[in-house]
Amino acid sequence: MKFLIVASYSAEGAKGVLKSTGGSSRKQATERMINELGGKLESFYYVTNCDAYVTCELPDAAAAAAIALRIKASGFGSIVTHLLLEVEQVDRATALAVHYPGPGND
Image (cartoon, rainbow, N blue to C red; front, side):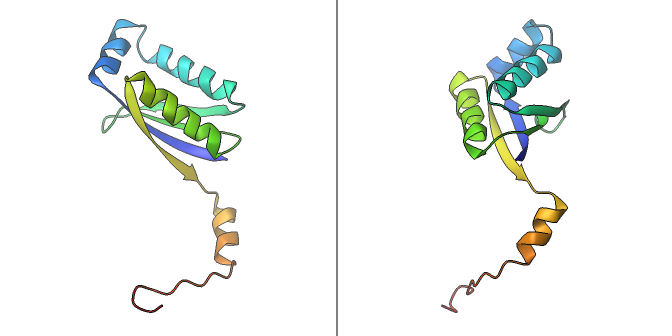
């Protein structure tokens, strides 16, 4: 499963980045964590509207939840995790028959 992780540092987390070797150490720590869960880091970018965008391959949603819990528990930041769907997956989804009545149309 592919995920986009949008990360934001707390004030303490940003101080840690400034104190360490900068962004490289955070990328290495992120890659180690993803590898420990049987995943693979695809990209790590620093961005201006939050702090970092990470794309990775993880074995399942539980691995993504483990990352979110670990980062939140550290107190050094927070993340929002998004499951990334390939075009073919969306194509398959459109072929699935699902009934959903709109509100008031039960």
